[in-house]
Amino acid sequence: MIQPGSYVRDLLRRSPGDSVTARGWVKTRRDSKNVHFIQLNDGSSPVDLQVVLDEGVAPAEVVARISTGASLSVEGELVASPGKGQAVELKATSLRIHGDAPEDYPLQKKRHTLETLRTMGHLRARTNTMSAVFRVRNALAAAVHKFFQDRGFLYVHTPIVSASDAEGAGSMFAVSSPEFEREFGHEFFGRPAYLTVSGQLEAEIFAHAFANVYTFGPTFRAENSNTPRHLAEFYMIEPEMAFCALDENQDLAEAFLKSLVEQTLAACRPDLEYLGKWYEPELLHTLESLVESRFERITYTEAVDLLAKSGRAWEYPAGWGADLQSEHERYLTEELFRKPVIVTGYPREIKAFYMRSNDDGKTVAAMDVLVPRIGEIIGGSQREERHDVLLARIREQASRGMKEESYAWYLDLRRFGGVEHSGFGMGFERMMMYLTGMKNIRDTIPFPRTPGNAEF
Picture 1 (cartoon, rainbow, N blue to C red):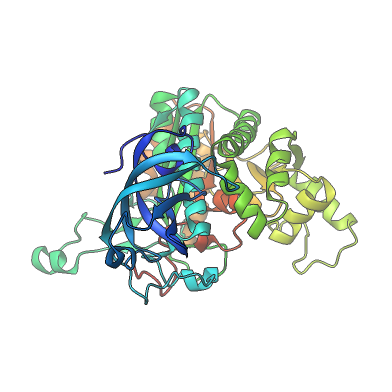
Picture 2 (cartoon, one colour):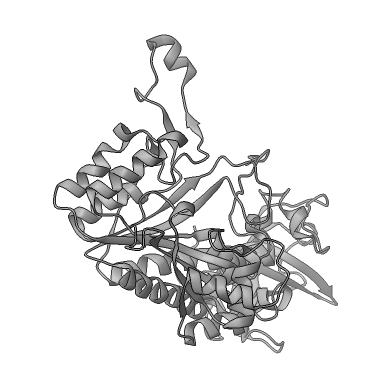
């Protein structure tokens, strides 16, 4: 096992003269007269550790096995590096090969497309691009927890198997056990059960006991969609806050986004610089601009008016009552305001049943946070805390398959010490697209699940 302080990222920061052991996989090997130069990485750093192996330190037959992809342990002394990009290199005194990588190892010097790498789910994490993406993913997950923990939020593990549909008659994966049902004559859970589309409703339960909570876990959508923005399995971050109205919800969402970007910039700047160089030239500028900006706040009605005044011929009409499309969201953020925008007060008919109805009878206290390049990155609302209003909304959805009895407990929250409360959801992989500049969401998650694809 690699011990703390012995990762490549740590060794690159240490001083010449230190005796160390480096472990990792060979990126490249080049040979000169009486010396071999090995680029070694263990996934901890965007910069490789250069190992200098003098002729005779290892037998010729061992040196011949040091090929791209092979796993090594190298003991030696750190010395000042004359090359650019690193302060030290490792002068080897002994070397051990743990595993060979023969000539058919797919990740040779040729640069593969991201599409090709998706067919190599067992190897793509070793590439420079994917290792940078997944270091960012790790830092982003840590940043999520730090933001909420620093503010006293309780982390709640909401169920993956659920009998409720938070979205209202959404596309859900059914959970069943045919063998169990044949043997015992009823469903395993005693009722239809599904993979969750959201932990929101369960988080609301805990918000009514702990005030401020959040859930961060896998969610599932059984949609036959193969676009670059959709996955069948993805992760959602969903805070819920009691004693919280829509204005405070917007404030928290803005602070959350800024904190995530700021923390990830601090933790992964070399990775983001690499991704910016190869995939999104304006990446760092966009991220730094978000941290420094004050988000614009407009109503849905104002947004529709601005789109009408733009003079654009939209692919999707932008009339009142229609949901905003990606082209509309990007126009608002990239061209009109040139910064993130929070849109509130959406039409009641296009939003979920649990959103609080506004006094105008036409809109709900919903909010979407839009950012350049991505469009919507956060969706949320003040939840409907009035029992009679919520009950009427659920009954309105009966024709779409919503059953009042399935939400009895949800209605009880309004009867027993109910309080105004709000929350939002952020797709973790959508945020990853924003942070890394990746154009396809499948390149932001270790093992993408899409229609027809669950290989690993």
